[in-house]
Length: 98
Image 1: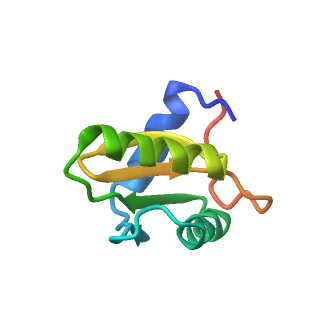
Image 2: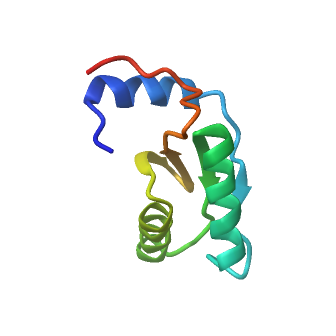
Image 3: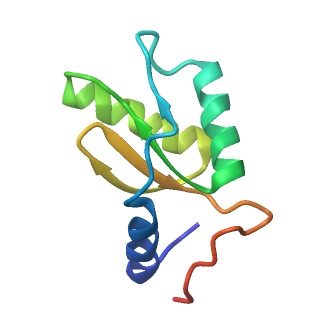
């Protein structure tokens, strides 16, 4: 899914007040965590995931893997928090036209 800059800015504004839905633990990115992220995206469409890691490269790899495996769009990364969006069949969030 390709989003225009205007659409991404709109979604970032909506995400501003959200709290992270999920926080990765000591086990890192597991199948169960990916399933929970997928379920959260299906239900909410726009979520935040916290990826605590001291190593920047490791954190970036984990975030890229989450985006790749869920098929979502990475909107932004703020510190350890990944903001992502994936439109569901219900289209709960009405994003502006391009």
